[in-house]
Length: 95
Image (cartoon, rainbow, N blue to C red; front, top):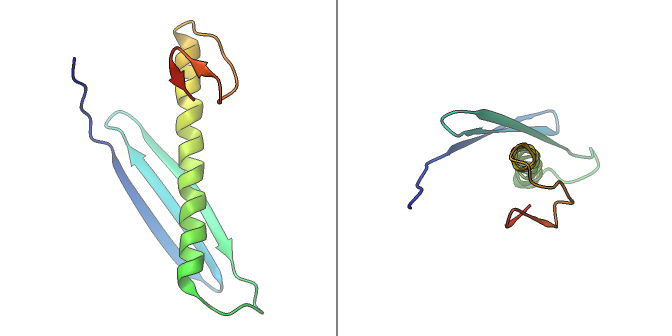
């Protein structure tokens, strides 16, 4: 049986006074998750906005991914599967 979904992701970046903040949102149609990340430039470093954007965005996406994995782990446990490390396969799914 085919299973096709579309999840929408948005990434917002804000920069002010050497700090870049990012907010990543994931809308699954039934749930919305939000991840946050930040990057702080040392005043002695050269101002390269792209680096702050990359760091803040990566951290926000990593936060979002971690939340999604936590939800998946709870869902797996709720159907009676064993709980284990994320590197162990659970119900055939490698978390």
